[in-house]
Image (cartoon, rainbow, N blue to C red; front, top):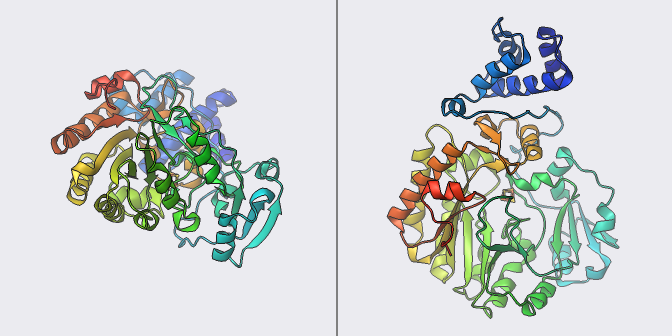
Length: 443
Ligand code: SF4
């Protein structure tokens, strides 16, 4: 049934309700139906006959949708966003993924760059087009879920205008961990159902900068060099490294800046480029980790946990430092046992003295991202959890859930590696405190 049909079901039961009320009830009833494997009509039919006022109907549905939060005394004031289902948006994750762009666009300024030459050699059957600028070429592109699903069809090789590094944007009201980002491209070949890049559907393809030497030059003249920085914000740091070959040059560059700590953050095991050059102690190779069952359900096409940890072990043996990001952690029945196994696997695979830091973060997303997830990954299981909009505008688990998750993981990690810094990603000071962490002295 499409959304118009769902609206009709609610309106048939509550004909006096206006569109805003109907949209809220539709969303709540829809989420309950999906989570419980019920028919939408059944959920609406089961609303008690005594519930006739909107507030009573909503309270009834809230009780079904957020039982744990309400049991903990949480008061839910949220107005729930309209449901919008586009049946053409689903991402087909059953098909094997071969990366071979149909078209490669080269900005004129870099059409003869080493990266352009390299990509032409790797993809001789792609169609090439010279463009004056990516900005101009993508200006009218509206994009949407279906277009986002086809993003690997188009590569753009561009001249990036580096303004050196940027502080990690974080989110309002949270503790900053002092991280900085540099973007060596935009886009990712993996399909994590929760990926925040789904917020940016206005890019018609994958973007590769051909001039990272310009970044190196800018960084050489940059005053605040002694920072932690990484390249995993707008792209997985290594997923395309076999195409770009960037990693070895980055290691070689930052070797000369021992006060800077540079992190590659990835869900791949694409470390051949790193292993091809001498390692440097100020280079951190970081992996996002999750239980294998979660990886299979929600992190499509990424390397499995064993492959990630084998790559981490190789990097540690080569002399790189390592990092692990439990981010996002998912809260579901049995999560403790699954995550305890991940902790065990990490410490079995990788020497603790190689570990530069470990971060913890729980599932969070914008409202727009949530809509993308339900359209692109209708079989996801992550949206069935109790998620509400937090003061920073992100949809998150309840505070008490996040604290429980952090305390649990912290106790495991402290037991294994008391000296490795552990920090929370995008959490306010009170959550740090309740989790048992001092937000002032992590680094
Ligand atoms: S690896 Fe990161 S960037 Fe790539 S799809 Fe997953 S979350 Fe997005």
